[in-house]
Length: 236
Image 1 (spheres, rainbow, N blue to C red):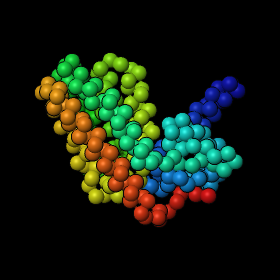
Image 2: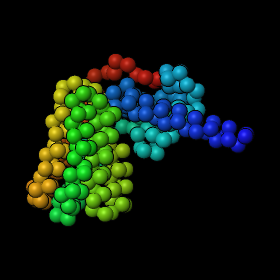
Image 3: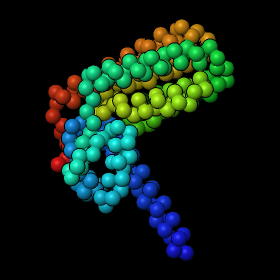
Image 4: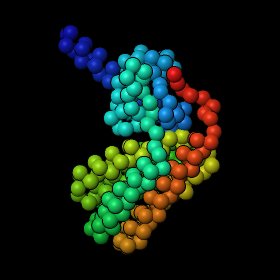
């Protein structure tokens, strides 16, 4: 019985850690956690009404994704991305994703491509209702599902890691401006081109899409630098 209780306790702890990690990601996306600022686990725990342990574990999960970095005896600092970082991430993604999209367009069946359409529609719906977490999750699934049709699991893992490290921060204002809806609609347009079998056009559309995402990054970063945050969640 004691072993069963231990397993149940572990399960509860893991679930709480996942919930806290989700809340921290939402705070990053909303701009409540600011790049460059150090946050302590106890202070964040008080904000969320939990103990420091699940917060610390959740922060370690985010650190493995490159979203934060541990600062000895202080807490965690939200990772800052420079313009050069953004350019390099975009360049690597372009080198991988553009030709892969072309290859998938030439080799995937209509049925395989149509199977991804519900996810493309989820991206648009999430953008329209301002669901930023849903937007990013659907966007991630769409791109990785398409790339998976190339049959290279390592390629998908590499792009997934790049996407985590180049995560958009503070998307609330962009969502309110309607900027995300236009980017969201590019996914269904890409899928339509791929289904038509035009590999060259699909590659060009993917190139423009990545450039659009890079523009959103730059706009968000410049805006964050110009305006002091109205609220820094759990900052030291």
